[in-house]
Image 1 (cartoon, rainbow, N blue to C red):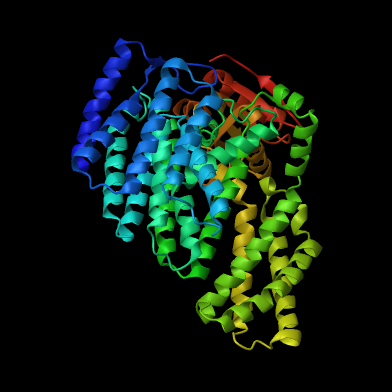
Image 2 (image 1 turned 45 degrees about the vertical axis):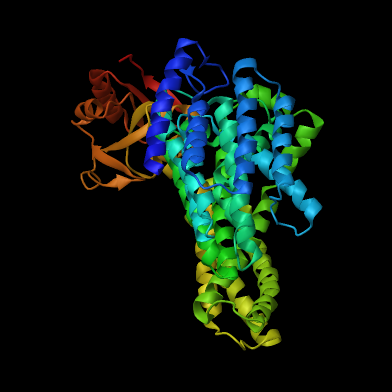
Length: 593
């Protein structure tokens, strides 16, 4: 049935695309939209018809599943009206609230608080929020449909684990329908799902997550909380990122724009395909973690969820720094009192660093304790663990402050900062061990080796978070032909190393370093910051031609006049510009290629 659903969706999508083109139901390119050419709409019709026909014909039905299908169908109709008549946002919100009320009336709730009225409010926010999150995620070819298919697959697996076979079958059909649509929606997309599709898909996922949660037999509250959030974490992550950055930039959260996570990844140099694939990968990791949380002990599950959340938080902060708005507009918006207050709060980076270190200290100690002493399985274990944690927090935060951990800037973290982190961890771990030995338990209940392993883990975590921005920059910023001039740096020494760092960190200069030139034969063939060192004298012209170089930059002001003239002659012969680095880069020879 799953394969049949995929085939049906593929055929229906092709038919709907032809009909949309014939009747001119197409999305026209706009300045705040990503696509560059008119593209057929109404792909959601194919998704909806596939699910409705296959589920009605072959699917076992339960009363609550019928309610989810009914609410999703109602929102499909609202979205279809919007695709043709452009319904106002508040009118769509009313429709979403009506569908959510129907689901809640059937008895489907997120049992997160145990207080029925509060659970109702939380459920409304969940249903409406996820519906709009999927709508906002539909901003790049194949993104929303692919993420939704991944989420549906993991929700189906969760239902199977709960022995909810009818619900799992329904979700499998839904995932197959999305994959069939994805055949024509992947880059370059020839059809979009439209609002009828995004609202149907979003509400269907949100409602199905309620089915998975209410039908589960979790041993603790954590899976009930974490499983739906983790499975649908990427739409939540993207919506949260966009909403917060728009607010900080003085823009309306409902205002469209090319400022989603996918757009920011492309702005960093990734191709559209790679940006979508990366978000697919994060969705798969999040879904796998959701399934693992069900079987993990509570303490292990908490640590795993905290670590993954920390990773996404750091990624979100890094992506938020990508420039996607007009600077003048942002500066003008930040003069407004409310926006200025939000920006001022957001710039308190040290507060974030301290809160981050609180999490790292607890995670490091937990990891060391469980590795050496086993999981926290009883009241005594938890008591021993919790007695030491406050001491670690007080002592280590004090040593971090004293040794200068909070004086550095993450973007420029280097070897000197790593030495500072090493001093801070050594001092903090030693002081913590002495305090525990003297005043608390004399290591009763666990080995002193816990503090050694705790220090090693904390050092790795501390260094990893501080250099995370540089790691993200290395992984995400790819060397693409994005308008930057390809340059060779003449001189593979300290000045050349400094110049490469500046060109890579300051992309506004418009240079993309591709290698070094140097006359020293001992350096030739080696690599500096990943760039190869080529020969200098006599090989400049061939190297320039081979690597399509636009300019050569002399990295050191100590080059003699005779040597500089020789390099200038070679650049003239190769028809490339020549510049020299002083306190600023000035032009010596510039020629059009």
